[in-house]
Image (cartoon, rainbow, N blue to C red; front, side, top):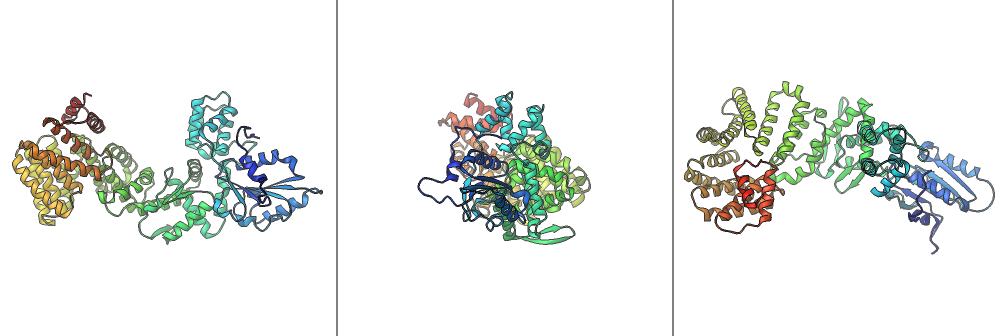
Length: 620
């Protein structure tokens, strides 16, 4: 048995024995904490240390007895105690709920120690609760190196982090190490099959493995009421949504249709939270304001167990996909919804795209990648969309329209980080196919043609780019009106494309567009700020430097107020503002120059003209 170090404070012993102030000592004591944290070992250690204080000590494995037979086991244990006077100790290990024991607690002087992972809030009227803390990282490393003396500190640190500092998991890993596995093999096995690693080698201190304990908890739900079976499906869904927490606060609406085999059932927001609360009460998930999560190790074990249960796994992924669809904002990835997207994006992006089976699920994922592009996370979007196209290869072959949407988002990501050749190839393909299939005047074709025009402008083909953009703008004006968002956006791009050849014309066009955008979108909208930025560049081209500088300064302020830190649009505006300030003899802080240079280097290489100028100014 693992002995608790003598230099660890005996807070749990003191609490169990009671204080000298006369505090009631007949109340049961509960050791509470997550699975694998060491409640069983601590209760055994307490019984061992205090054995001399009691006439008899009894131990009942409540999880093995089951709630229906626990009262019988308690009665039998009390009857088996030897005669004589004096206190007795009864340990009830692994109790599921307070209801399982409240009717069978002894009424005499027998002291009762209970262990349970069930939410501590349910126990306060029944027992004095002691929350078992998780090991610190140093304690975890010390435990591993005590069990495996040859283990190096670096390897111990890696293992402790991967095993979430859980004593049961740490001892399991140690047993594999002493059987000949290397630390790297243990980590790889944990990644490949957590349930095998954490269930296949039991220790003498822990009667049941961590995987075994989770299996028992899931079996209890599976054989319980219909409500408990739905709680189990929700637990499975949270596991496949992991390891990141799921933002329940992001869920839209108050009810959703959920598939149930051949039928549908309605899941309401109160029902969902009731089931989340049930899982939390059983110590299976953690809940904090607006978030639900499984700890990393439990999630890995459950995902691994699901891999062997195909039907349960399919149900888990289906429910998880429905929850993701409900969490994604209804609006496209626009800045008005960025706070909502910041909540929804992590679990959506962590979800395996190959597991998405429905149209709403695919749209939710593509909208999330649009959000990544709009928020300046270009390389993340390029990498993720590449994996998505590989995972959806068969589907996209049969659904070309969806593939064109993926290509459009991917092209925007490439354009954002200066991969103009890649962006041009993608946009041109989308433009040609949409023109052939949808016609030249379809809104989707017009949007693709404007993107292709920007690619041409980036390569210096300004005349061709302006002509193509103008044709699209005229059609958008006809379809939606000159003051529509689409037409205003294209007109802004036209002004940008005309600047190198005709800055005066570009300036007047930009002024008209800017006034319309301020009127319809507001001064802080990113389309308005894009136009303002390029309007300032028109003024620079016209040698109106002193008019351009305050416009850039104002635009930079609004960018910083509305965009995430380090957004490339903010960096571009800052770069042009600092360069113009320096040209006008204004002092520019070196820290600001360096920060802007470092940020832009994350998107562009040193060959870009603006990046080179910043490097020279910042003395990089």
